[in-house]
Image (cartoon, rainbow, N blue to C red; front, top):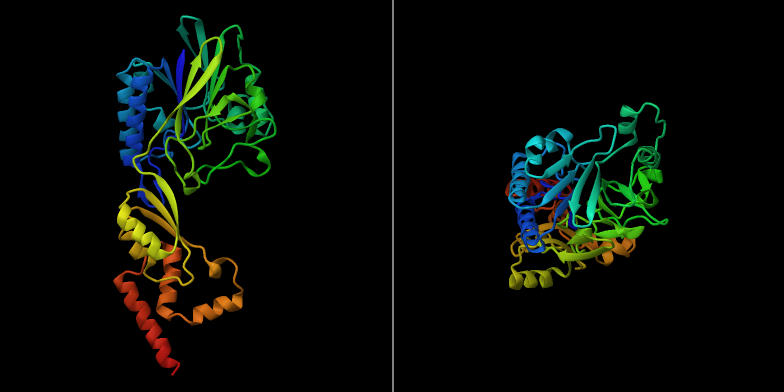
Amino acid sequence: MKIVHIADLHIGRRLNDLSLLEDQRYVLNQIIESLDTIKPHVLLIAGDVYDKANPSAEAFEVWNDFLTQLSHRNIQVLIISGNHDSQERLGVGRALFEEHDIYLVSHYTGSIPVVTLQDDLGPVHFHMIPYIKPSMVRNYHPEFTGTTFQEAFEFIFQDLKINQEDRNVAIAHQFVIGNGTTPILSDSEIGPSVGGLDAIDASLFQKFDYVALGHIHRPQAIGRETIRYAGSPLKYSFSECMHTKQLPIIDLDRDVAISFVELKPLRDVRILKGPLQHLYELGKEDRTEDYIHAILTDDIIQGDALHKLRSVYQNLVSLDFDNARTSSKSSLSRATEILDQKPFDLFNAFFTTLNGRDFNQEESDIVKAVIDEIQEESL
């Protein structure tokens, strides 16, 4: 049986103030094209379909279009909810989905649903585990007195009936650790709680042939090669700029073989570092639409830096500074540099750092008037 595993779509997510819906629609269409080439029997979607519990109408439309395209293909689709998903929003149309071989588990109801599919080698049991917290387990099982996620999953897994003569797959959306190591995180996901109370150990999944995980945005295996985070299909933070996003393809025969197809974004997420003029000239040549975080290394911060870079990088997301003044110089030398600059330029640079934009004309006029008034009073 051939399986494709995706997770953490986060439809509706923004990169700072920039909507990523066009990028998300593009990569979802790319996934559809890949499915047409791969021709899997099953697509697993391991949670965090939406970025917010109350998604926008535009986000709902992107997801609905993706499901519609899937329904026109001969693929079984199994979906669980993640911690970002609302059971009410995600569960809309569930009965209709099943008529098109799309199975959705939007919330925990006291037990773990199992979908069994057949191929030439026999049955494959898919255990669909939506995002679960200890409080959810207590709602259905008052006898459960644990407080950690590990205790909750140990309790839940007591009742799992797993026939190891057959093939078994788990789909889950949790923070899983393995062999004393934790997943590699990025800035775009919610990390583990203090004390690791939300972590569960990969050893709980030892009876499963493959474990399709969501929750962590960097593609990676945890504990063993067949316990795997698919990762998000797009880079949702600049800490992911070096990540390669991919589709895991699982050939679940008598043994498990895993291969990958790389996903190419409509716009990449990149960090550029250097002097302002160098980055400006680079942008004039490149004219890229990629999402850019610029780090300026000039010793003197120019007040119009943001405006100048935005003239050549239309998707400049953020601006930072890394120079002698910001990193290693003493307070005295920093003060000396500040005294050498005009008050308006200093104020504009400070405002730009905080707000990610230059003064507008009204703000500029007000600041200049205040500076002039202070300087006149000091004469």
